[in-house]
Image (cartoon, rainbow, N blue to C red; front, side, top):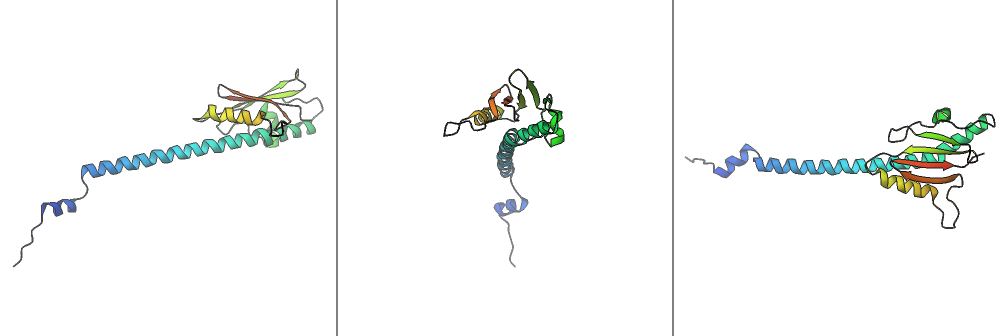
Length: 164
């Protein structure tokens, strides 16, 4: 007759994981979750910055031209809601409202105050301002319809030349 005896080690393995093994597993899972969240947040901020750039160099100027063409010659852009009918979003990709100021004194130019959000707002705002006002390698302005662009205190300020 054979008797089976279980060693202490084999019984322990049958019971499951030790507390230390569980704590290590939870710590690794937490670290991976934190890295994933950081990557997703960074990617979404970059996507929002790209949306803002497209808005400022394509959508907004096109809507300003459409407004000028469809209105009387003396129509001025006094607030952002005037452009809503041309498909322009009234909020930034970060969910803040942007505003417009008509600079009648400066040859009919319009200044847009565009809030930049996100954890890296200063870096993205300064980079976007530099891109908008920057010169090309040939020495000419990148966008002839932008008079100036600057970033300060969470806001990108862009002055557009009269588009018509």
